[in-house]
Length: 336
Picture 1 (tube, one colour):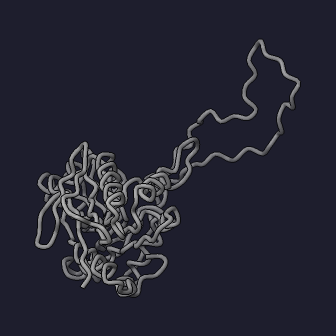
Picture 2 (picture 1 turned 45 degrees about the vertical axis):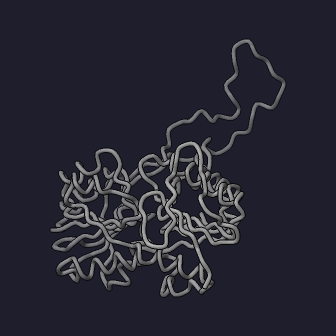
Picture 3 (picture 1 turned 90 degrees about the vertical axis):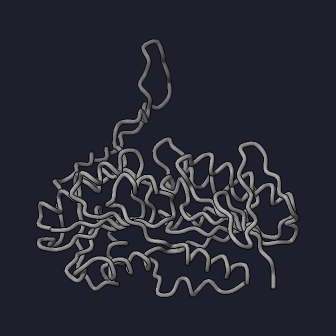
């Protein structure tokens, strides 16, 4: 049987080689030549330090002649920065290039913010899904879930919500209006041609008169679908700043929903999120353990955790043994 080595930065277990992540140097204590190496790296609060640790570790293994270096990154950082926004940058693409340059040959992750992110990588990416575990939680832990309705808090989340609704044979509601997040439309100084300074002359073309884009105006908040007398289950991939979720819960309460659940894969729960959840109309927030959130759970008993380590462990086993990954994607569609 082939041997594999798993590198961790947090705990020790049977048949696992523990290498703590120092800040300055990585020292591989035994030969990894010709082996499959799995680096398990969760993303804590200090995101950039975690990324640098992963890069340094991968490069150390590459220079020690490891055969395959597989990064197990349950929550892929900077995944929301996957589109060009004004004068910004596509940080997710940059991170993918850095991981490839450091020596990674494969990545296992879960619920990328956009599936198209897989195209940023020059090596295979297995984007596992947490939805089977969250669906099981709904069926087993939410009393009278048959009286529930799946809610998308913005039109962009409608496909995910529709997938949950179809699998649970439940209704679907979509929220639209001022509570949704959108890219800021504030003026960013991109004017063409630039304003002429007082002492400057030019013989160039004054510029074309192009039609102006009509400014956006958000409509009043609207809930498309009947939530009266129902359990509202809002589904999303990431819950970080919770103001939008709190505002959505208040609207749903006003429309007659008597219980409100939030289901998300990655519970970042930054800043004052635990306090806001505790004081809100939300009854329960259910997230997986792709991101550590033990402190937030102590601050807010409404936060519940679903364990997804089983599917990550099975993915590691199958990749190491050269088995098909299709079993882990049974009944998974493009919209999931």
